[in-house]
Length: 195
Image (cartoon, rainbow, N blue to C red):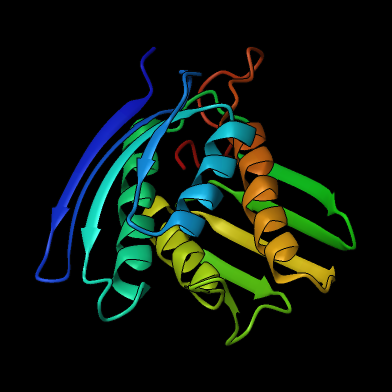
């Protein structure tokens, strides 16, 4: 069964082409125009053991907001498309990840009921030229468009790079668990019969 999707999105602010394959493990090609964000997206696909090809052009002369949010929209749509009816998937994923002095916990449900709970020390600060408050905007857009109930919690941490990197790595691990096929499951993991 092939689990992949292609998304193209063009607005007055961004022009994005994205390919996602949930089961292909090849080096990804990620070009968002924001080096730090490329690094973060690479963590999702590496730790989630999937393939992403992304080409994005955005109004970075304004700031990174439109690019980061629209990439979240596109990645969410691609994930939703690639999962299809979500038959056979484990549906739930959870991971706890230490990143030096910080601890990150991510729990998610591929429920088709989008919700983001986000409790982290990341506020209106920067890592290099990247506004770390955009991490929340990315995951909000992704969860809305993929239909994910997503809880991201960082109970402690100091280094902004470590916190952001830990979140993206942890999300990748939790997502891999949730999208994994359970060979003992017939249909979908829901008493409703649909997810």
